[in-house]
Length: 290
Length: 324
Image (cartoon, rainbow over all chains, first blue to last red; front, side, top):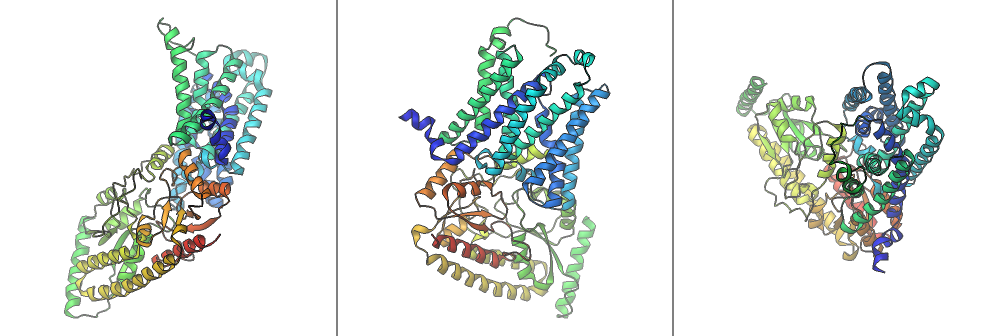
């Protein structure tokens, strides 16, 4: 009975808790596998850069139609896509790595956004409006996040094989097919859509955190990519559930609670997983390249 | 800047000396340049100063003065000012740096001086979390302010507003003794309006049964209204304008509504309404409208002056508390 009250009644008594759970779980389903691929491509910090990169888009959306979420989100997605695609293109055409070109473009984008906002002369904090919280998911936000999740999973299923090849052995993929770039850009689009949707519905910390932390833990447990993705999703789902319960019972902010739960899972993985610190770390190895 | 300022002050002295010698010379020509930190203060300064002042507002209508990133033109207008009026009580955390960087050396008046400040409720740290979040999100330097131990929203009670007005009148008199009688007269007249405003609010709220006087707002700005007029406001700080709220706080608010302890829900003109909307949806309690807490509305809005703002808030509150 007590267990029931601790584990289930918050979600039975309160709609906002159910909505929060559905939102966070929907995001876990799509963002966690994406996180695995980002990690394997050494783009783990993309999420943070993207939070800045979307500013000019949101600002233009705001300048055009005022404080309304849809245009601001659409603008954010477009700005994020531009930055992601430009940096992807540059990294393919020049010697510059993707992380370097991403850093360049997101800084330009951020500066442009701040400039645009100051032109308008307003002091409303746009990012504050754009970044939501997991406890205030309205119907539109829920619909958006579940649609994004569905589209992401379907797209991943379709491009799975070329994407894996593109991640792990792009030279091989290039030798047998010219689909590599398309797949890469499709993947970047998924990243941006998941991030911006996540920012708007759940907040920056939660969107980026749910994307990366479960993926990092799963990498330490699994060797095969498929099991890595599945484990990441499972860790994401469990973290969402436990984090919300912690936030409910102890009274701490929900986003950080969920992310810290995922962080705890990562710590456990570091200590106990086959590829964690304890079981593999004491035998010194060559510095890993990938 | 400095020499300009000195000459400005010198001119003022000379002019005022000349004026006091032969008074009633067209005074409109050289208005006192006043910079005020936010829209409510500007209204006060305008009332007291009348035609003798030019007021520049740093954080304009519907703006949030807790979090503000000063612009170059703010420093410019501050450098040219003869008087700077701020709220004090650690409300405008970003202001000290602006004053310093603008090179302004004139008088800085804390309009809330002399008011006995309310202590902030336990654990009320306003929207600091939010600001940290913003800083991170925007990557821009923004003054992270700390409200300290006192609630800065002192203007939310009409008797306090009278103190504000008195302080402003004193400050203007210091600057220009010749026009002091005008300032005093304006302040007195306005003070009377504020007194009758106070009476109206008191009677309106007083007519509502005590057990119906608990409402929920998005951010905790009505502490003085609460202590002066006897309306209980619930707004757990983390729920406020912060983007990260705790599930426990939201659940507590919903329970309060379900137990019929809280009778109305309000959003505010300066903060994000989504959480309150969600609570409204879950409990079926309608949102009673938007309260104006920290900023006035635009000219055509319902709260373009301080008195309008207080009346608007009072009528929304009483309407929502009486209903259902």
